[in-house]
Length: 93
Image 1: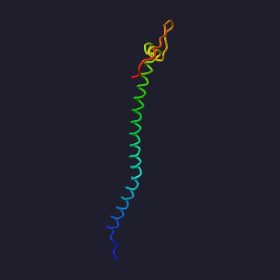
Image 2 (image 1 turned 90 degrees about the horizontal axis):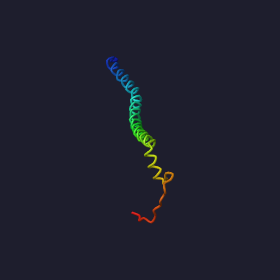
Image 3 (image 1 turned 90 degrees about the vertical axis):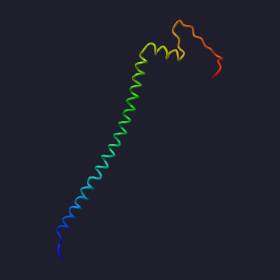
Image 4 (image 1 turned 180 degrees about the vertical axis):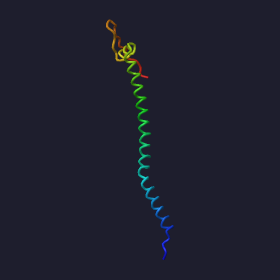
């Protein structure tokens, strides 16, 4: 029986190709997983940035005298010298 070297070479190359592909599977899966995680983190970052912008705006508003007075009056506070009034018996809507 004769050895067919061309077949042995083809089978060897095929096995080598399969080994190389097998070596690339885990890194490819890891890359896809990392890419997905990156997208999720990017969305979280955008949400946190929006929240930060809202909180920064609110902090600027709270430093204004007009806002401080409005919030104090909402809590029922009055200025020195003002006469407070309490209205009761109003119908509920």
